[in-house]
Length: 120
Image 1 (tube, rainbow, N blue to C red):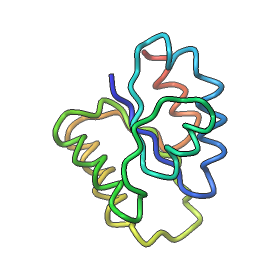
Image 2: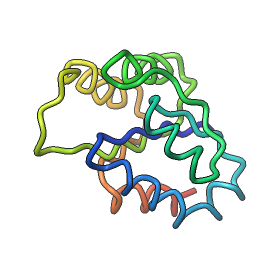
Image 3: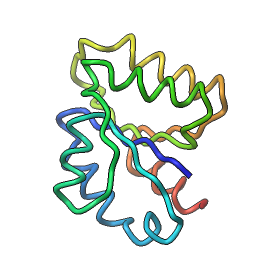
Image 4: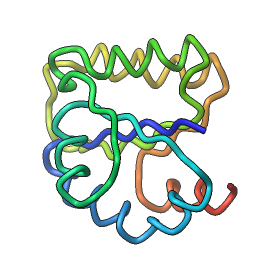
């Protein structure tokens, strides 16, 4: 199973904390993590094995959306910052739309992400 992890700047520490709290599930289920660039680098520094793609604003969100469309991504955990403006909003909306189109589970906050992981 491949899970994409993405976190806006104000949510990156929260993502790493979430991964740490759920590392047992992530390791026991043989889950492959992919991510946007900076989120991936932070997760790697925390000890997680992650394939980091481009940074979100440089096309990383679009790369993950492509993986969803190609059925290479099974779940997306995207800790968004709803109070900030992001220059790559079109890519974010495309990713969310494709998760709906291809029926890929999408969590945009820790509570939903936890429920998805518990469902594994």
